[in-house]
Amino acid sequence: MKPSERMKIERQDMPEQEAAARATNFCEVNQGYSAPSACTEAERCLQCKDAKCIRGCPVGVNIPAFVEAVTNEDLDSAAEILLGDNVLPGVTGRVCPQETQCEELCVRDKKGSAVGVGHLERFVADWAREHRKDLFEPPPQSGNKVAVVGSGPAGLTCAGELCKRGHAVTVFEALHTAGGVLMYGIPEFRLPNVVVEAEIETLKNRGVEIITDVVIGQTYTIPELMDEEGFDAVFIANGAGLPVFQGIPGEHLKGVYSANEFLTRVNLMGAYQFGETDTPVIPAHEIAVVGGGNTAMDSVRTAKRLGANPATLVYRRSREEMPARVEEVKHAEEEGVVFKMLNNPIEILGDDDGWVRAVKCIKMELGEPDDSGRRRPVPIEGSEFEIPCKVFIEAIGTKANPLLTQTTPGLKVNKWGYIEIDENNMTSIRGVFAGGDIVRGAATVILAMGDGKDTAVSMHDFLMNGKATGAKASAGEAVQSA
Ligand code: FAD
Image 1 (tube, protein in one colour):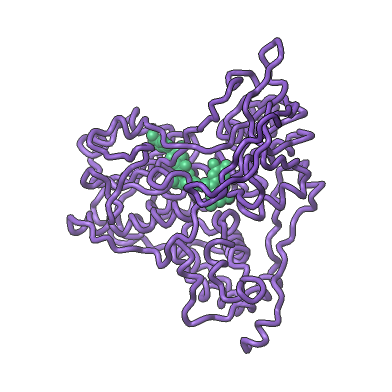
Image 2 (tube, rainbow, N blue to C red; image 1 turned 135 degrees about the vertical axis):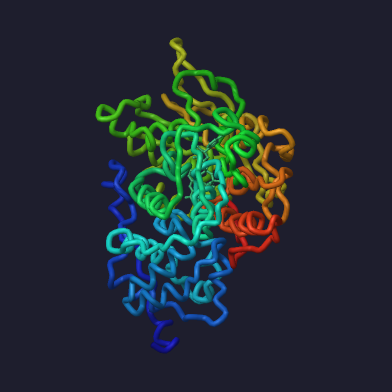
């Protein structure tokens, strides 16, 4: 097909569950392309010689090559290419902020709308999961043992890449289930757990060992892993999952949750099916959530599905400054979430029995830009008002958990508690590497995966040659962090 013909094809919409119906269930919102839609969308790709989209992908997926294979209806080759570069394509096809990564650099974005790379990635990954047997051939074993701390996207990617290079990898996970935020944070209606489980199963079949219920820093320390358990190198990818609270009066009241606790109860422990499962969440008609990122959006949309009416989102800046993915904001609005922009909670109010009854907010206006480049929200004096609610969820961010770093002598961290690394992703301890949120602070799935992939290259050099050369696996640089 000539480029001029490709240019005439319009972007294919992602079929979605209808908003009113989906606001009452936990089934996936996006339904995935049909084969004809995927093929049509793939034909929109101009197959640029200098494919800028690849530079926008932190794991360096060869986007034009897998998209061309979809055009040719050769899904086996498309899967081979995609899975060769990305061990979690069913995940990234669903949750990556493509609009600020690969798709932002697509030449078609400048002239209308970018090729739907994420939608195509999801299509190929789902097809592969259902139709394709993984043909991974185990390489000759190097004899090296590597420990990975944490089974989120950074840890899993690093484990998969090291396994490809012949090293024996054991992932230690604190929770009873592997997957990190993918399993306990991101809800079923955006990322079904079966998708994550299947991609983890592929890694296990390739030889990655995952041991759950092991807290590094408590069950074993990092020095114990290296000196007593015989690991030759360690990759720390324990994320940044410690909730941050606003520090306002009333946070002790019954009915106040951190977003992490609320989402873990619902997603990981199945509270949305309480009765069949053992873990409840407090049933409430009126729920308010504070925050403007993906976590806030996931919390308020989850609250809506649990029956909250209204489910209210309070955010101190305006909609333009929200760090959440554009699609999540749009979906939340369609589902009937009430947006209270330019408002900030200043106190949680309780009743005589110690339960939340309302949150007191103050109206804000935008002043000069702050360090983040976004305009600083400034309170408007005398504008306080109350939002009635029985549950109040704080989704304003997370930080590093000091448990591991404090039990690892000699491990350098910065002033926020995030681990410091050199250009090879090695920490201040020889043979101990780190990546993902524990280095960057809360960021994105694909940036964590890029770190895992890059670090595997450095660790391989270290294991084979006794030094890390800093070779980078990914073709791309991060365009954005959330
Ligand atoms: P994590 O995913 O946090 O995994 C770390 C793992 O280490 C966890 O399983 C944890 O239990 C384990 N662990 C912690 N301490 C220890 C220990 N001491 N010993 C053993 N194991 C330990 N990003 C996107 O790109 N798109 C999105 O749509 C998106 N939505 C999000 C929604 C929510 C609710 C949240 C919280 C985050 C979201 N993010 C999103 C951000 C993204 O999920 C994270 O940036 C990413 O998961 C970080 O990966 P990681 O591997 O570094 O850490």
